Length: 148
Length: 124
Image: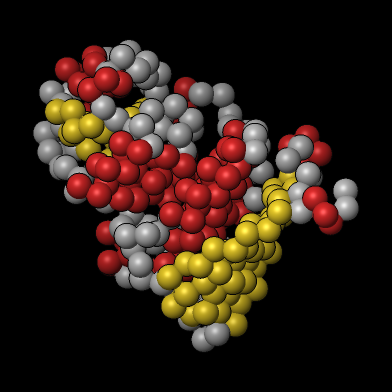
């Protein structure tokens, strides 16, 4: 497919804005439902983007989420300005968390975010610079059989 | 069983969704950790939780839960109820604890997510 078939939309996520936390993922879910993406794929995308969005709200000053759709894949990139991650390998371990009590009271910060993203995205890439920010890229194939 | 039967078993109060009480519920799961719910939740689940903030309804919407039961008599705020209404997710509140509420439903024959065939949403 050529690039003309791409749809790109960027959303802003504000750090510490718990009342809006998750709203971008809700919007993405609605966009994907409208264009008729299979529900199993929507689930994967929504769970991964929600976890990524919560990470920005909890740990960063602000972030941008970019959704790119083409006939074969859904790409979500999240780039934030924040504290970054010192040890990505450690952060990828289930249960490892640096969350505060306040974040845990929100129902998050149990050290499952990045593992949940990895589990749901077909391709997951993460890079981070401590003190600068974190970049995540997730790719989901619309044809799950091809992804397997 | 229907949401109406669950309401009676748990002596629950309907906060939103009286007109959805005929919804058929086939399995349930309980947690206060939304990341855990995102990890184990399956479409159609009945979610029991002690977390009453907006994230509880967002999480229920993302995993396509059929309804939410808040335990220990907790009730969400107006903004959370409004969001549940927008998303057509019925919410109930039971005075029972998480342990008691889950135990009663399980004993009445409502299984957990383990009763479903292995999930297809995992790469592992």
